[in-house]
Amino acid sequence: MKILIINAGSSSLKYQMIDMQDESIICKGLVERIGIEGGKLTHQYGGGKKYTLESPMKDHTVAMKAVLEALLHPEHGVIKSIDEIGAVGHRVLHGGEKLTKSVVIDQYVMDVIEENIPLGPLHNPANLMGIKACREVMPETPMVAVFDTAFHQTMPPKAYLYGIPLKYYKNLGIRRYGFHGTSHRYIAGVITQKPGLEKSRVVICHLGNGSSLSACVDGKCVDTSMGLTPLEGVLMGTRSGSLDPAVVQFISERENMTATEVVNMLNKQSGLLALSERSSDMRDVYVGAEEGDEKCKVTLDVWAYGVKKYVGAYAAAMGGLDAIVFTAGIGENDYRSRASVCEGLEFLGVEIDQDKNKTLRGAEGLISKDTSKVQVWVIPTNEELAIARDTLSLTQK
Ligand code: AMP
Image 1: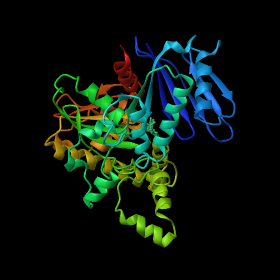
Image 2: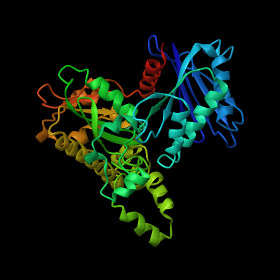
Image 3: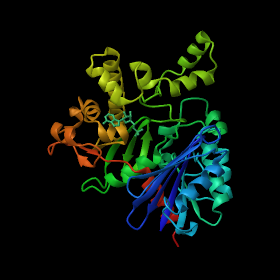
Image 4: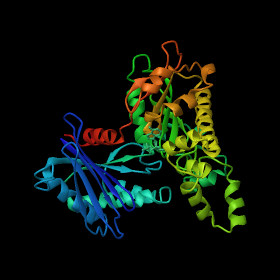
């Protein structure tokens, strides 16, 4: 069965088609600038070939039609008929407390995604537009929603409640939800298949432009670093991560900014970018540090110190630690970042093999010493495959 994965943003739509027989990628692509001038589709197929189309993309339905045209194109296409697409899997940001695992999309599911718009104001409306556009252009094809929040729904109240009046939780749903759940779930699935780690206490470090950590006991999430929104937690590319909430009022009053403007600044102009005053990209920050830029050096220290504190906190929360997993752009590719997070964690039983760590990039492998009490793994994440697998299992007859 061929499955189409859709990840719709407010002005973009990413897609990927996977052949579930061997889980290979048939094609993937991106529609950019939906609803604004300069609409463009980039379609990659046939192992490295590329086709681009510049055309106005009025809305997500037009974008979805362009995707289908690319998929069916006599030269650049990969299928002969829409019927070859067995099902569509949609990445959806926020399922709230009602949608706690992947589900076949029906009217109820769409209503709940809509209900959760206040919790995911940028993504949920876009995800919904993607679903509606798909329904319009391929009404007969079954669709599944896979939520970024779902994996974290196993957290107990002690991990998800904030210490504010309960009415805000009860009436407004304010609590820790956590994000990157599809990635954390995929990694938890892989790590619990390793010999000796079927029953285990694992910290998963998803370290990319957006970063989050999760504490997983026997493959189930018991805590995670992102909160009501993806702003909480560790320092990220442009997000500040956790800080004293009074900072919002302080800046707002002194700089004459609204709370929304301050939170926007915390989301888009903070993190690595703000501290390095150079770039939100970890590679650039390393280049700066190598050139002797003190701001970049401090940025790297703040970043690693913050991640390390979460690892320690989660080891305490789980009453011990059996494995650490690094994943996503930084976690998969950057040995320096992995080494600086693990440095000083020897007291927990973490011993990195520096040679193994240094040579491993973008591939799965164990980077701890044979004597290390805690296994340290690098495992490339694959959110699209996780979405495709859910979609297959929920739709195959
Ligand atoms: P992601 O959001 O998962 O795509 O990750 C993006 C982040 O990964 C950016 O900060 C990149 O700088 C970082 N990244 C990718 N490759 C490397 C690398 N080789 N060394 C350091 N950081 C990297």
